[in-house]
Length: 163
Image (cartoon, rainbow, N blue to C red; front, side, top):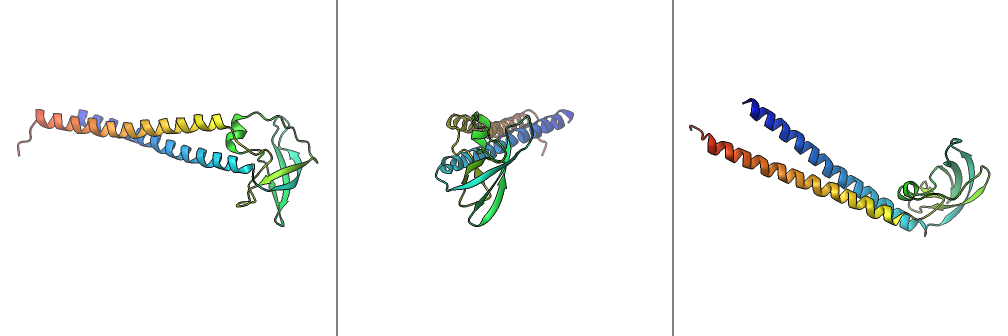
């Protein structure tokens, strides 16, 4: 009886792990595809004049800037979309008071970037990694269920019930 409980708890742990892996892969893949789509369209967004307000801290190149679009004022700290920000180096250096061209998402004017575009190789790498997570997650769930069914069938064959 103790081995059955141990076996079931191990199976539960494995199922939770592989299910979580598949879910993480799906969510990450969705995020990367949407982010890269936004990066690709950012080059066609309308521009607005903006001004650099300040650097967020002395060690970082991250800045805060303000701009107006369609009669509303906005502030942001986003210089590029996620994929480009984390996988492309920035040659641009901004100083407080400097005027900048701000690329504004017309569907969501509170979302803007200073440098449009993305990082294609990073997108490919990240989506492939998301696919690998999905593949192993779903495969692991299927494998765990098939192994569990085989173990149950073997146990029933070794110890037939007295019913």
